[in-house]
Amino acid sequence: MKKSKNRTSLAVFPGSFDPITNGHVDIIARGLSVFDQVKIAILLNPDKRPLFTVEERVEIIGETYRGDPRVSVDTFSGLLVDYAEKAGAAVIVRGLRAISDFEFEFQMALMNRRLNPRIETVFMMPAEQYSYLSSRLVKEVVQLGGRVRGLVPPVVERRLREKYGSGRPDPSPRRHRRGRS
Ligand code: PNS
Image (cartoon, rainbow, N blue to C red; front, top):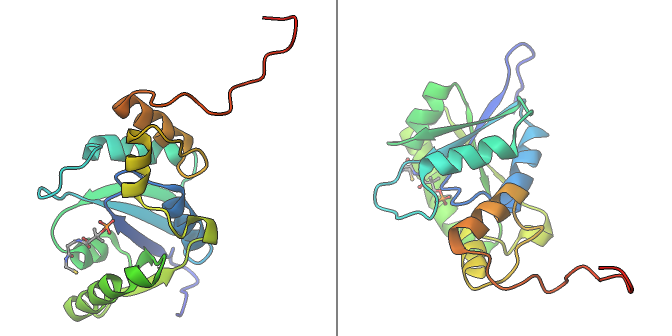
């Protein structure tokens, strides 16, 4: 892909982000190795009942990327390609974790290309340690009292605990030093 010298290259990274995980964070970092800026675009979807409101998701992502001017967050409704074009992005970035993602992603990419051939979809693979990770699994694990440290940004871990209560106690509590309380 030809990279213009004078223009900032912008990629849109669309999704539900309910909530953002370290898999998303990994894809954003990879996106930033190719594009100057990444705009995270949260779909406003009235058909879904998310755990985090759109406002909460914007806040969480804002906190995760505070101090990094290369990453911004926005919401959109309607066609993704229309949003991307209005935002001034020529590229949509999507993460591909496994073969199971492929069919849906392939359909979306080709439909988006048909709708607007000026917008290119670029797939990026996350690090192997995130290849099984999903927002849905993260929510389920926390709801059932499991830990997700290292799988989500710290702000997400905290917000999940606030939503679901503290869950099971941490299985690796700090060791008490003998003779001291
Ligand atoms: O995180 P998700 O839920 O996998 O993200 C899906 C998303 C938001 C990328 C997809 O649902 C989308 O682009 N919706 C916008 C509607 C649209 O443009 N549809 C036609 C193209 S397939």
